[in-house]
Image (cartoon, rainbow over all chains, first blue to last red; front, side, top):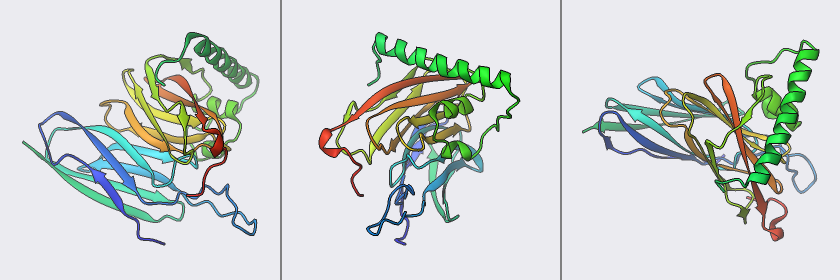
Length: 108
Length: 160
């Protein structure tokens, strides 16, 4: 398996109480389980089924995913920051493989 | 396609009212227990049962406060951008359904702190489809839909 790469966009700084936009993208095939290989055998399902984002340990955003999500799942969502801290992103796939990433933000 | 024309929205409203009332009838006529949320909704292939399960046995109300932004015509069905903005207070979760997919439920998004119920993602289409966003807010359910058509020379999802 190719090494999973996560790309995240979080502003480096924000003012206290500001609502910021977070964009996240991770490399993953999101194999739906509906396709067959050239010999007609079904390719087993392998998708990311859970994505969570926490800020200083508190949940900000989470989602459960089905087979209808495109490969390399992309999400854009909003969060309010009151203090400086770290966003912690976790993706979990069907085989239980965890992809993690962190981003820090400062208050100005 | 943010705006849905009146005739279409009435049709969608009638359709979903019918589905929802069937759901209420089923709920009243037997003692089926609705799991609050589980993986099997992602495996559900029957749209009516899925909507029923998502609305937790209640009726989802058509709402113009949900802004669903999707392209009307797509070239690549493997990557279809979808944006949902629910201008409703106290949004707990948003579910995105691609109605003609084998498993219509694409994703369900939950908000920790209720800041702004706005999300963008990318879904996969198997054929022309109606995309529905079902929003849970303050214990009630709301939905809105938009149609997406594939360009004819890409009738099947391309290999990615």
